[in-house]
Length: 397
Length: 93
Image (cartoon, each protein chain N blue to C red):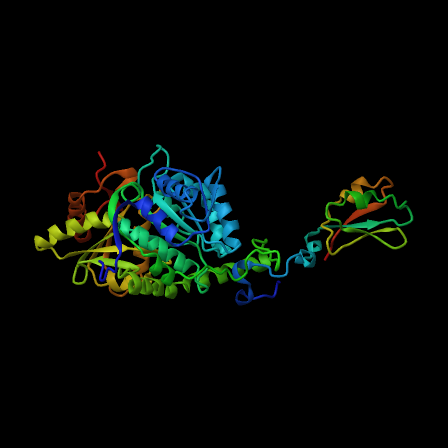
């Protein structure tokens, strides 16, 4: 992936620590957080950095995630560079405040160590928490490994705080698989980060010299206009999102795209994943390619705003698109990502058959063999149809 | 405010002239309007004291009057008036 590595220090780091290091390099001003598995190491490390004087930031220990996000709102509103982290139930407890952050246009960075939702109580990874906050108006990206986690946090500050954006950014990393696994990570150099990330300047900050009212109420006469303005501004973030990745590549040598692919260019059969499972899936793609199967992998990096253009260009050429969801939309389309990509392709003249699988729930492994089965069975369903809307991988009948 | 288009709103709905809530007519929430028999009023000020919206003003001559720009028509003044000189009547417009 790295095209040119300039003096970058390669270290063995947990994904969680890679985030803390990125936040430190970004010289974050305020961290307000509440611990929750599997996120705890992120803010634990940040608290340590602040206590040891390595990072000059205000660390606000709060009594809940609702308070964490609320404190972040206030901090960001004064123009402070702000970060928090959470997972699973914690993200749910933040839920209502997430909407306030995005509609007040406060570029908070939130790293989510994605985790299943209770009950039964599960601290292990899946995408149920992420899917529940799909419509909160945050820019959202998924990381595939520790390096991406480190890089995307730097990028999140760069893009969110851009005067043309001013939206909060969520960086998703799979709980445990990325938050707790030690991987080799090329740490960014401070001088490069300073070049990449200008100081944050909020245009209308809370300041006694020039008082403003934030988060005022919007009666029926104005609410519709406020939402239209928010939606248009959110759609317009796309240009800066792409520009941010181009600038990142120029300085750090690693490239990022809204939709990542692996051996997908000529593939008739595409598998779609998000997050850390992409690396496992690519092993299945390799072995099936070796067996002469024309398969490829699509990995959704940018989840919000949804990269319609890039996705259609890649997926539109295929005959079959097999989607693995790590979440259930109960009584609905079952797979939320499946539902979304299917509707993204609906108006296309040439479009693949889209097949839905559910797997990797609550920390259940999805192995390369599982992926080979998913692809083989997916092709079969695309050809012959199926009695069910989806199939669940590895479930004991 | 009611005429602003979505393009004219400040970033994130920020209000750059704070304290402008006084420009907001809460009087149009009203379905009942207070009326008063000025002959019976003893200027005790109980209506002024009880009004939750501070929508009762004291005139220069010491008489109490309704500020219908803000009055939401809750009827607390009519209920509290010891002389029963305030009557709520239905708004017809």
